[in-house]
Image (cartoon, rainbow, N blue to C red; front, side, top):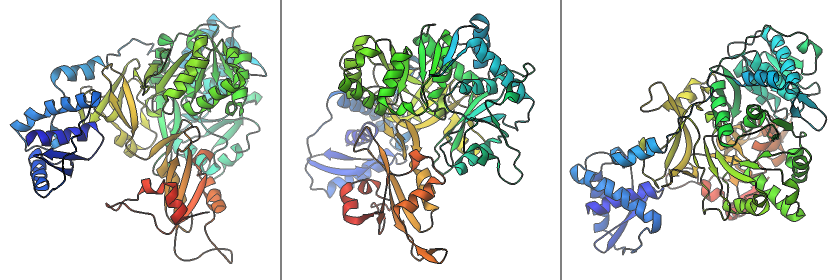
Length: 638
């Protein structure tokens, strides 16, 4: 009986389930597992269930690697339970000393020296001294040398240093991919300030919310940016907008105080489940560690060209914007908007000798399909590194890359990392040939520690748990939000004064010391690599008059084009606009939500139901709502 109870708990750890089937003496019973319950209590419940059960055993056993993992958990738990079955299930350790040392120490042996006394701005100044006439940045319309870029940045730094930037020292940037973009970023950093990238397509209300929380007083924008003027309004506002091509910004040089490694480098906002985006604060030191690892593992040289095509409001842009400095290479800024079109990307890579590029897996699928249709992969012979991140990289995508670009010598690297840990924290270099059945997210990068925890304890190889990240890349926290910072940035055991970030991602270790991504433990999803909190969209919908309840879910019927769909219920009573009663319509919902959310957070469809379906525990049945047949029967498309 004891072994049957332990096996039931082992299934709870291995199979991502909170219930299991227990088989004893020719009978079986399905029982729920509560980690706060003791083994003795669980055994008593199982005994009662078996007595009243007439269900025969299935005879099924876990096989292969799953069976070995299950057996290992049973072996670890059984002697502890026999010795003392009165403790809560979650308190029993699953690791012996040897395996614990392997997982916590050997898998995390990532200590590597890096230039932690320097900043990105220091690198630019050094390159400008050594290679002043070398081209640093290019666009379809022009170029900047290292010397010219450093001079323009220093002059902008001088201008910014004379202004008051509030307690946080953050300057907002509303700039397209032109030669003014790197000048603005380096100019901000050179004044010891942090940059806040803003999306000019986002609703003004959302942008004002971001800059207000960051205490922004200065906004650098393209002269023709239509939204910039809207951001200075408001009672008592002291914010000013400066056009990036204005001569006054570059009138003089000298006098700015350069940044220190522990100063903020940037603040990038991510989706927030409460309806308010979270500003992630990242220091120069963290960025230097991330880029130094990339340069050590995939060295750039003077002939390399990095394609910058990710919008700067997303953290992948960070390595595109700054890594090339480490190797004295060149950054090419792709024409704004062209990053959506495979042909434009192909032509840019070929014309500008691009050797390094990034794709979100869904867009990589589209790009590879284009290359196959046009039989044009041979035109990209100079491409040597393709990094993919933001979504799960599937084996068919890796196989298509190997077939089309791998034969030219290009390498595919799968990256993983939340914004709160400075872009990426693991990497898997996809080998040539057929890909594995599940592509790992890989091993931790330099000076990074990864923990897979269940009930606060590390778990064995093959057992799933929540992934926590510690080390040099962990962000300072969320700007002006101590409550959410304390919730996600926790003390790292064994490392006094260090924090580890709770990613909310479900992962497991492999025997090779690599991590596999299995999913989420909440309602966060990724769409085209962009992190989306469904709660933020639901929060915006609930503020629309007449919306009584709502659920937003991701429709992934087409893995290349995941879209958001919303299901709403209507409040009783009338809402009037002027003298006319109004009801819920798709256009009205779309218009109202668009006032607060960027385009990628607006659902593609809205369905009205009489009531949201509930599970047996009283929670909204999201699984049922996501089934097309349910909405076809019970819903009305608005």
